[in-house]
Length: 329
Ligand SMILES: [Zn+2]
Image (cartoon, rainbow, N blue to C red; front, side):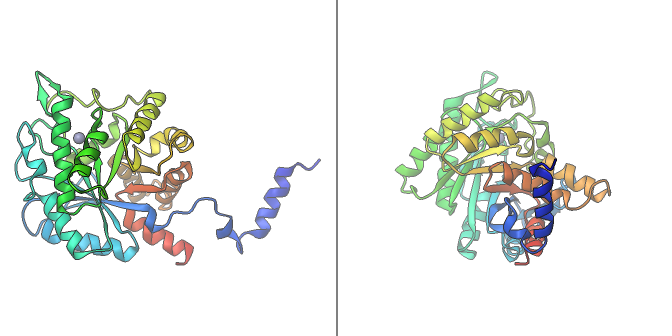
């Protein structure tokens, strides 16, 4: 007896290689990719992050280098993280126009009109204690933090961001930021919400790069427990209701079930953030010869296949070059 499976496999073999591209259900193109950039104070800084292979921290005057390299490869979207010139308990450097992220946004907006710029909005890189919000009596004060986050988002918009990406996971921040932007004449600035962000052990290398490791406690009060899928979906759909333009799931590779469910339930584009630990795990295993180089592409293809049209990844430039070679474009 011949079942449909062997037959169809046989047909596929016959059609391969002539029609291979047309039959691909999932293709990554450079326009799907977003490159995160770490911006630091000072001049002429081009500093490798030891825990993240191939990732560097740049001063504003050197940013042209990674941006032009990315654009050359077809990557035109950038997510900016900043290290401020000073930190204090309330993160007062986070919304100042003279700080690295705001200076970088202004410069890139002027110099590269075709680039799409997104500013990461959180306080953990700016507070002396490394938490994502304002601390009162040992806990994060949600409402005080919302005011600060709205002000940070506004400063990014004023500096030239096309979108802001609140990554703090406080309650109600998308609507507060949306109102602040609309009320200040920035209704065209989008909100990319970190809608389902798990309290993950895969963020470790990022915290080296962004100097944002909490001085005490952890982020389990406001990030999602890894165990809870339904809670993640609920949170993400709340961000949709509050006016988000894109929902980010983080870490992407360990949350493909959530991506898939959200693709069914949400009415917004989804972004998957392949986080520092996923990048370092893959890049480290490839450079040690434990994995083939195409494991990196396969991992990202699975994020796209699950339902993410946007993929934020530290390997965006290499990936873009690779897919263009593979597709012959
Ligand atoms: Zn944070």
